[in-house]
Length: 101
Picture 1 (cartoon, one colour):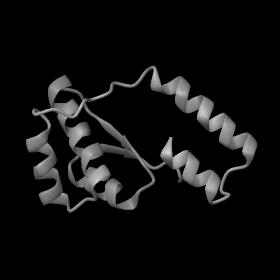
Picture 2 (cartoon, one colour):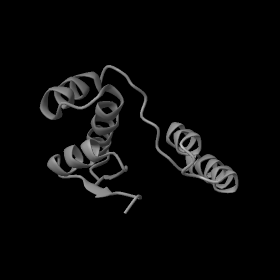
Picture 3 (cartoon, rainbow, N blue to C red):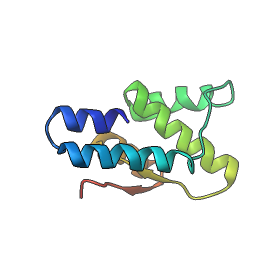
Picture 4 (tube, helix red, strand yellow):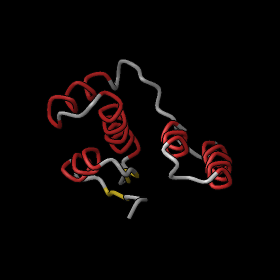
């Protein structure tokens, strides 16, 4: 949601596209698996920050993806346009999608 609002503020989205993106995000949210920050993920978060030198929110995203992949025994895909997070995700051997491409 934050990324959508930032894009609107930067005038990268029209009002119509902004509203459409918000509706799509809210619709997609129902299908997402939400990982709560809890004691199980804290060691992974610390290791992710130390290993990949990511900012706080990006480290939470990557640590959550790694945690989910381990727990679900599934291949995880990181979807982001943030270059640092994309690079770290690739180094962590996650599949990546850059929607800006």
